[in-house]
Every structure is written in C-alpha cells, then in structure tokens.
Length: 347
Image (tube, rainbow, N blue to C red; front, side, top):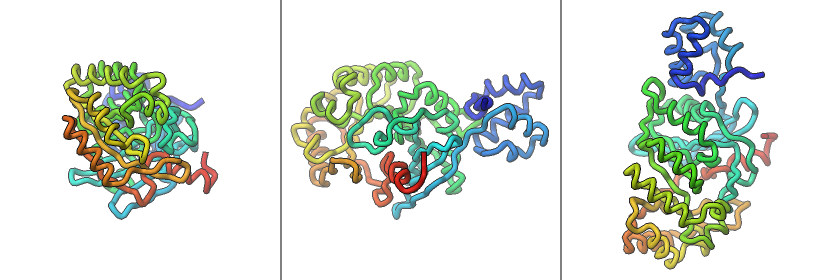
C-alpha cells in the first residue's frame, strides 16, 4: 500500500505528522518548503535533512509529482505540456506569457465526464480525479522547466474542477499558503460547466477568486445539445446560482462563451444572452472555438465574433474577445493527450 500523500498535506497537518514522529517542529517547516515552494520530486533532494530522515520519510509517505512527456512551444511564447503522473496517467497544462507575468492553465482530472461536444478532453473518457499535490505539481514542473515564476493560475484544463471539489479546495488552500507558493486568490480563476450545488459550496468558502462559468449558449435547447450538464442543471437554475454567488461574494462572474459557427453565434443568440445576463455583475469572454479533427464544429469567423460582442455591448453586457494563444500547437484542452495516445503507448 502506498503511504500518505505528503504533498497534499496542509501546513498544520504536516506539523502533526512530524510531531507524531517525535521530530522537532522546525523540521515540518523545512519539509513544507521543499514540497510546496521548491517542488522536489524526491526526498533525496531535501539536503538539509539527514540521510536517515530522508529514508524514513520515503518509507512512510508518497511523494507525487509530474514529469514532462512532451512540450510544444508556440511562436507567441505559449508552451503546451503533456505531463506524466506517477501512475502513468497523463494530463495537460498550458503556460502563457502576458505583460503581467506567467499564467498556467492546469488540469484537475485525467479526462472528463462532462461530455461537452466541442471539447477534446472528453473524447478519451474519464479516468480519475487529481489529488491536490498533482495539481500543484503542474505548477512546479512548468516553473522548473522554464525557470520562471507562475503568478496566475486558471483551473480550466482537463476535467471539471467542481467535480473534484475536495481536492481542488485543498489545492487552493495550499497554493495560497504564505509559506508555500503564495499565489493570491485574486490571481486564480476557476472554471465550471455549471454544477449548481457545488457553486453554492464554493460560495460558502468565500475565496476571492474569479468564478468562470462555461455557458456557451443562451438557451436550454442549444446548451443541452452541446453540453449534457444542462439537462441536469438548466440555464435558469444555473444563472440563479450565479446571481446568488455574485450578490453574496461581491465578485464579478466571467461567462465563457465558445463561438461555434452556425450553432450559437447569431445576433439572436447574442440578444438572448444579453437579456439573461443584464443587471448581473458579469462579464462575457468570447472564445473562437478550437478546431480539431475529431470535432464536427468549426469556429465562428472573426467578423461574426466581433459582431456578437457588439450586440452584447449594445444590450448592456460587458464583453471582450479572448486573444488566441498557442493556436499553432493545439493548445486547447485534451488535444495533445488525445493525439499522443494515438502515436505512443500512453495510458
């Protein structure tokens, strides 16, 4: 049986473990720093600990990390990673360079069970959820590979973050710890396709992060066709939860809207969406669909996206168009893992 996942332990939990071993408390601080700040991949790297203590830790605890299997570098400085986890499963992350620094888009599950028709992550099926340590390890691996500091995190990679609620909440607590990576909650965005009960659970946590709702359609007819989750949590129920969230937290909600040619990109769709969102503390982020060979959908043209944004603004809804990064390296979620599985013997 594998030992306890030491990297997923909070500072207080780790202190309790170290105390139970009869070790002085300062050792917990040293170990936490190795795990959370430096992101070591082996207990042997903890050089300010004795050899005997390192060996004892290796016997008692499991140290989860990820290694780079494949790296694709875009001409715009975006880097797409395929990471292998310690059990051989693979996930993807995307490192993006902005004027303010580096943002990493991390995965929270191996595969996805939500079944959105325009997303490559769902094509390989759902395998398992990631631990907090495995989500953290994507940041450590990207920082180590590029020699940079990640200052912003978006939980928008493979998987549905709120379907892995407990591990994602633990990740948020760890990544924001002042003795760890200490990434501000205001620099973190969490995306969900709309698991309504979990939106309320997240609201109770009162994290000052940005909640992003993958809405992608203005009504139940279109949304249920491309997003099966809508059949369980229809759009009115979802938007009611969003209004409650915005009212209670005071945080503006970002609505992600993938523009799919001939499906959800008409002026009528824009007017209907504006009618649903008007008066809410909200922002709409328009995203030209990522095209991949297994998808029947095509992205809307640039003129259509601009027109859609114009209609939203004229109807009182703030909207922007997401700058496309990494389009030359298949940077959308799931594509690299999907293609790599076909080429090599990956899980």
